[in-house]
Length: 286
Image 1 (cartoon, rainbow, N blue to C red):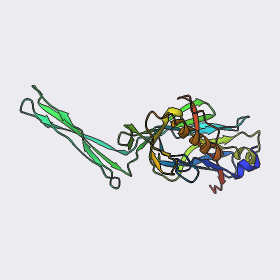
Image 2 (cartoon, one colour; image 1 turned 90 degrees about the vertical axis):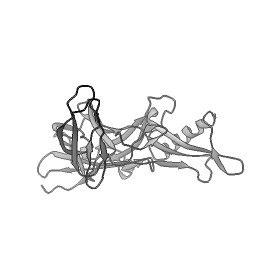
Image 3 (cartoon, rainbow, N blue to C red; image 1 turned 60 degrees about the vertical axis):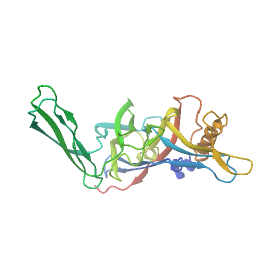
Image 4 (cartoon, one colour; image 1 turned 30 degrees about the horizontal axis):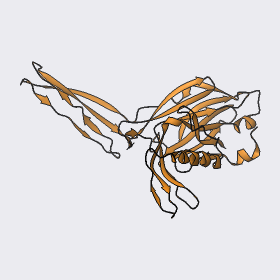
């Protein structure tokens, strides 16, 4: 079992950058467990307080949500009940053709977006030479538009992984698209249906359901880095300043303070642990 202090401190995350929460429901009279989660990405503003030598903004280019099992493995996943991500919108594409009679004609498109009413778009196309027709597509969608795409991979049978990447219209920092907002519309998202191993006590195994948000070192985006002068004022740090290492050390200490594993800031592919949630049991009357 997990140490008592870890169970009581069930949410650990780098403040401001990621939010992760998880809960599960076990169907009455069965060993079936449904796992739910909420996640969100924002811009973190770190440092700049009394005693700090630096201040900076931190965002993410991509991240992973990992399910972590303790040994011995506690759950078997139902492959048909694992959420494998989806497109950013749900809608219908309707294609129409329009005749073009003049050579070298061009058909321009338009794009309109609305987070409340969905969106419709006409994809830009061009007809030239002897082309007699051009087509455009209209897309209608319902629900809010998201800026985080979710895909799925399974590195091992007992530990699924959900991948988060920015969509084409995501915000950018220093020319890189970043994660911002929630990766799914619903506040309640069932990620998977599992079955508790009957050889173990369900209560013990359920206390070990863990979800973690991680990224690679190269997925971190530092911006607006400032250094404190002797007079206490913060000024912008130059790109080539050797003091930029202070920023990485500050982040490393921030992770440790949040009770997250100490990060390797030197390797671009090192795994950085940004948040962890121990799933909370909730009743299911079904």
